[in-house]
Length: 78
Image 1 (cartoon, one colour):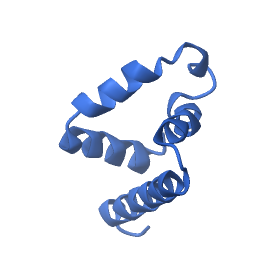
Image 2 (cartoon, rainbow, N blue to C red):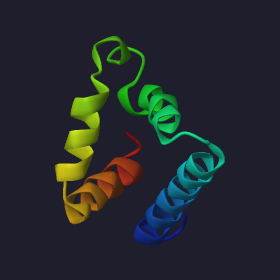
Image 3 (cartoon, rainbow, N blue to C red):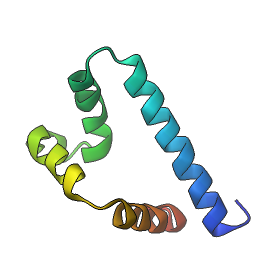
Image 4 (tube, rainbow, N blue to C red):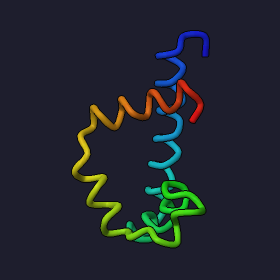
């Protein structure tokens, strides 16, 4: 974690690896979405989360801007 960019990339890679391993172990992809929804939404927004809207948003977001946003969230500790 000495280099901010390298540390953030490593942390993000670990998170994605864990998510992908969980997805592979889940026999039904819809179950995987419902399992990750509480982590993505948080406790306060989980009650109002609409899975169809959430997955549509994930499909429309570009990968560059998602990576850019994730980098700054990790480096600032959000």
